[in-house]
Amino acid sequence: MILIIDDDIAVRTSLRLLLKQHGYAPEAVATPAEALRMVENTPPELVLMDMNYSLDTSGQDGLRLLARVKRLRPALPVILITGWGSIALAVEGMKAGAAEFITKPWNNEALLQTIGTVLALAAPDAPDPAALSRRQLDAQYDFRAIVGQDARLLHVLRSVGQVAATDASVLIEGESGTGKELIAEAVHQNSRRSRQPFVKVNLGGISASLFESEMFGHRRGAFTDAKADRQGRFELANGGTIFLDEIGELDLSSQVKLLRVLQDRTYEVLGDSKPRRLDIRVICATNRNLAELVQQGRFREDLFYRINLITVRLPALRERPEDIPLLVQHFVDGLRATYHRPALKVGTRARHWLQEQPLPGNIRELKNLVERAVLVSGKDELGPEDFQAQFQPAPRVAAAGELPEPGTITLDALEAQMIRRTLEHYSGNISRVAKALGLSRGALYRRLEKYAIPFDAE
Ligand SMILES: Nc1ncnc2c1ncn2[C@@H]1O[C@H](COP(=O)(O)OP(=O)(O)OP(=O)(O)O)[C@@H](O)[C@H]1O
Ligand SMILES: [Mg+2]
Image (cartoon, rainbow, N blue to C red):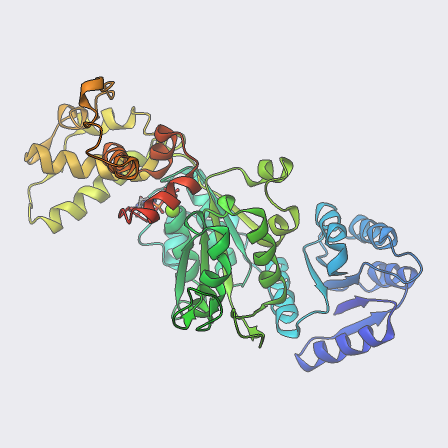
């Protein structure tokens, strides 16, 4: 049974009808007192709760009711309904234990999707995933591309398996090169959307002025440079999954636009005011600490709660050194096949040595290191010295004479050159390149785009 709490009879009636039509058993009440009685005596599986009661517009009644429901039944999922003007209230509610929030006027499909997701996550018959071993996980899901047995990684894989089948939004946090994109793909591949598109968007590379046209598309003539119609990323991803990478780089004005779409599941193409429906699974990733950005006022709290229904934190490679030999093995297997070198292998000593390296670029750095060592050494059995040789020496300071002669190069060209060299130096590791150049990742991406410098977007 789903309990609807709203003092507006029109809302109660339409919600009840909608839920009934979709096979749920709804009950609707008008007051907090009735609601609490129901929660105590005939506990529902889910509560849909309005936050704005006509007598008290501050929403304090709603928050109080939520707190009492959670005290009676801590595990009972509650979805809050608030007006757009009072999203702050929804955020308060999320902190107090609500599972999700929707805004009025709601979109029926988005509401049903949210209900389905929240119910699936709370299902009592869901197997206790805490016990699944790597082998059991592999029997149930397709995690072929993901190597590792570390307890923290298994914890991630269990969460991924559990939520993959739902439409829950997933936030993936982790340092650069820890496998965030790989995990995002695994969520998609193990979902019912696996045959639909998986569209990756690097939000760090999209400037505020282009955000709408990139994401929502535009009609020809919508603005001066719109020479032809353009499909937005959301449209390309419709029916499937959209992967919003580097979400921590998004500027505040784009954040509110993104929030609106995720909220209403509708959007408008620039130059065409007809709203379009969106059926989409959202996965976000970041190598920053979003909670911290929220505290600094650089990331909207409501958007944060909108995207992090499930948060997955990927361990750094140094936290799971036991997986290093397995990963090395995996990369060498790949190279053996690619380069037809059946005798290729990495010696025991080298594997131990690699395990002790700090590898701040994580799995991507390890992969590049193995690849370079194999290609450069040309040997069949690699020892520690072959890997050691690949660690780049500290960059030397260029002598003044090494700068080009004045009048021979523009500052832009010089900048582009320096970015190319730094990219090469850090084997494409964007975080380290940005740091070395003293730029934010966003600023670096914009320059990469400006100079059309190809970079490894994996
Ligand atoms: N568990 C794993 N098993 C095998 N390969 C992995 C694993 N994790 C990551 N990789 C490989 O390491 C590389 C980096 O992974 P990925 O691009 O997913 O990292 P990321 O966290 O998105 O990095 P960034 O923050 O730099 O975007 C990829 O080539 C990926 O295939
Ligand atoms: Mg990535």
